Amino acid sequence: MRTSVDCFPCFMKQTVIALRQCGCDEIIQQKVFREVLAIMQDVDMNKPPAYTTTFIHRAIREIIAGDPFKDIKQKYNAIALSLYPRLRALVTASPDPLWTAARLAIAGNIIDFGIFTDIDIQKSVDQSLEAEIAADDFISFKNDLASSDQVLYLLDNAGEIVFDRLLIEELKKAGKQVKAVVKGSAVLNDVTREDAVQTGLDAICEIISNGSDAIGTILPWTSLAFQEEFKKAPLIISKGQGNFETLLRSRKGTYFLFQSKCDVVSRELGLMPCSMLFRKS
Image (cartoon, rainbow, N blue to C red):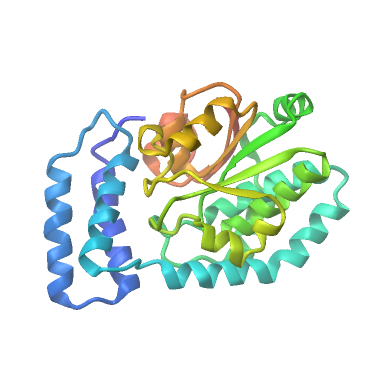
């Protein structure tokens, strides 16, 4: 994807959201905005928006000397974990547990503090379970999964990781070896190893780092070890809009599970905003 002029207000909105999370004083806020405006002047419009948002969040963390999303990540991990028993019961009772778990994983993608500031997870999940999946390649996914012993699962956001856990559990029940990928260090509310431990995912499957602090997965910025895992994986599940932005057309055998939460991505897809997707690359 390329950056659109419509991305620029979103760059500023993300900055405001981050500053509200950290509660820093006006002097720090002014310093952050000056730096963000400087970054926006040098945007490469041929790159996905995730490149610019990565630079912006690096600058924010450096100026405030910390991670503005640390507390809210822990909060929404805890909220999602409190819903886990009900969600697990839904999957277990389903005539097709894999399909239900996949749908819940897409529903969980609504937890995105780069876009929203407050989320009613339960309400969002209920609405998502009733909504139609606009691009549904689940049948193709099941066919590809049947011939794949290993799955590389690119995680997205904190809180959402609990919904991913449901799908990963079903993949494990099907006899698949799953490697779940976390970010190398904090960025926005993206999943790190700390989140995998808090939500118990580390007890279910292998957790590996991509060695990067980028929004999405910008392959040249990831570790050589992760690049090798990505290259050899027979099947990849890629969660979230940022991964879609950065990995679209990157390789075959990748399934994108997410909700198109912004107008730019929705236009790229030819879909209404907040459409749910289970799309094969």
